[in-house]
Length: 589
Image 1 (tube, rainbow, N blue to C red):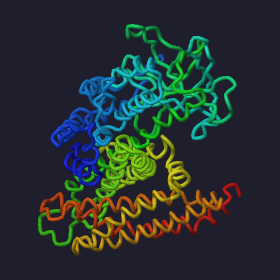
Image 2: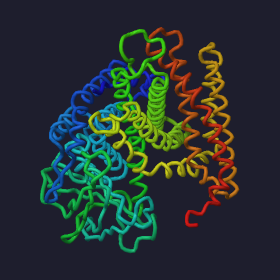
Image 3: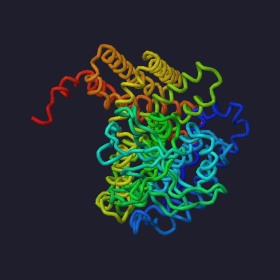
Image 4: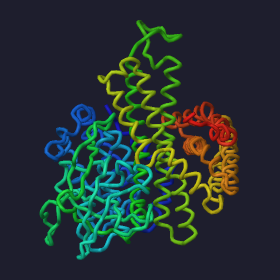
């Protein structure tokens, strides 16, 4: 049973991530604390009562393909339509096209709860919202007027078509082609794989965003264009016309998220699928990255959502399951396993890591909102760089946390976790894709080191570390309960600073291979240090408050500082000292 942690989500938004900064802007003057709380409460109710009960049955039944049509599991279509009619798809959409124009932070909070309800359910709308943003920023007015109102409302869904059998992470190898018709449209030919919700029975139309090459396009990623290819054409009056030349040729049988149809899409078997150019010719990747960047945060939130669901289930099981005798237990019979010190440690770790993921994702959303709302160029640059820096952290760290916490949940269940009856295994199976898609976590690490670390000549990362150091210094003055955590945080930030300066020096001297050899441990190092700082920040916000929630936040900060911040010193050594061994290794030898 899932219960949305609305109070913890609200606390993180307001006291850790900085929601007040966003709501202070004129564009959100009508968004009061009461409205925020009402949105979170209703999103949590829908996630717990409408989505969560579908998770296990959807996993067992899965999506089915027959004669090119996908049928979703029983109850899923009705739940989606109720979700869309509730206005959830339009939270952040432009009011010009029927959206509510609310902050990304509220979307992130609601998305956590929907992913806890069912990751397979939430991923479809995630792609639609990404398509909306790409069209808002890059499409012609005609395309916007035709497609955005129904995409924003959720009446139609959108997809992202990048991957091909020979072109996964490296889009230089992309072969799908687009031929101009002469009337402003293009005929699209090719095959795309791993297309999430490429076919489904939720909506009457599906709007595919497809990367393809024009004739005589430059080689590599400089020659890729982006096209809008609808499943059904749209008539002048807005009604649906005939079927386009695009079909689903198969769906994947996957480790997890079984109810999410992962499709092979074929374009142009009958003369060419008709599409419309989005943005400029040969500039499609830039348009698609508008969709992908927010999708990366959304995937990080998938890790967070699964971690929260797995933690809740593990806590419930540990308090019910009885085995052995806990020292000092004078009751009759065996003790609940939650009383055993090692189980306590594991449950505490699950809660701490989940809160780290929540803080990373919500602060990333805060930076995205601030970059959009900033009134002057310097502020826009600062917040754009902050959002860019936090995106690979939110995506990679949070999805790693999703897998790790779900795995610990299986461990808490013991042998019963390894069988499907309890549902603990599903969380682990579902979570495992998140570190892979929307740019593998290794690619996120490369992005962090080579593109984000050098922003403003390295001064942005230095400024971020200084902000985190101020949190550590404040903890020193907060009394004995947080003084030790503050000291440990300062040492972790010292390791982060040393590793960052080494990375910047290596990049500046042309030693890129050495930097790349340590990219993944650097991302982990930065994520742990950042997460530890956010836990301390949350505990500082509770000073003087006498409540179980405040005591838990203090405990999580103390535990994480003592148990995990020391890992940063070892990770620094992986970054600086292990590069030679990594580069000397020959996998073919």
